[in-house]
Image (cartoon, rainbow, N blue to C red; front, side, top):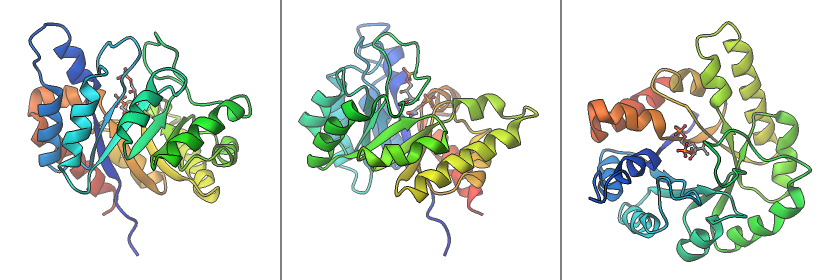
Length: 250
Ligand SMILES: CC(=O)[C@@H](O)[C@H](O)COP(=O)(O)O
Ligand SMILES: NCC(=O)COP(=O)(O)O
C-alpha cells in the first residue's frame, strides 16, 4: 500500500504583511487563497498574531468561508490558545487549530510546547477545541521523548517545527538532523498522533524531508511559498510544491 501523500496547506501570513503596508486592500488574502485552492492546494493556514502584523482578525472569517466553498480542503488556524486563538476557534470551528507557544511580540515561531510544564494548562483548551469538532495539532520541537506527553493531553496531531532541518539542509550534519526528525515522527505515530510539519520548508528541502520522515499528513508552507509566488504566481507555485510532494512518493 502506498503511503498517503502529504497535503499542502498554504500559509498566507506574508500576503497580509504586504497588504498591511498600504490602506488599499491589495494584495488580497482571500484572492490569494482562492487562486491557491483552485490550483490544487489542499488547505489554507493563517496565524493571526495578537499584534496584527499580518493576518488580522477580520481576515479569518472570509478565509474560512472561502475554504468552505472548496470541498475536501481544510482551514488551519495557528496561534497561542492563551492569547487570541480560541476566539477564532469558537467562532469558526476550523478543520484544525495549531497551538503555538509564541509570545505576543515574538519575531516568528521558534519553539514548541514543553512537557510536563505546559501539560495542565493545555489540557482544557485542547478538550474545548476538540469538543467543537476541531482537530488540535501541537507545534513541537522534534523531540521523540515529548510525543507521548503531547498525546496524553489530548492532541490529535503534532506539527514538527522544521527550522533546524531547514538550517541543516546542505550542511554536514544534515543526515543526523533528518534522522532526529524521523525518530520524532515515528515516536508521534507510535503514541497515536498524526504528524504535520512546517517552518522554513521550501522547494529545495521539502522532498528530502518527506522522503526521510514517515507519515507526514500535512505541510504548512508560507514564507518561501509567497517568495516563490512573487516570481512564479500563485498557481504555478502551488503546482511546483505539489510536484515536490509527489517526488517524495515516487
Ligand atoms: C508556526 C509557524 O512556524 C508558522 O506557521 C508561523 O505562522 C510563522 O509566523 P510568521 O509568518 O509570523 O513568521
Ligand atoms: N506552520 C508553518 C507555517 O504555517 C508556515 O511557516 P513558514 O513556511 O512561513 O516558515
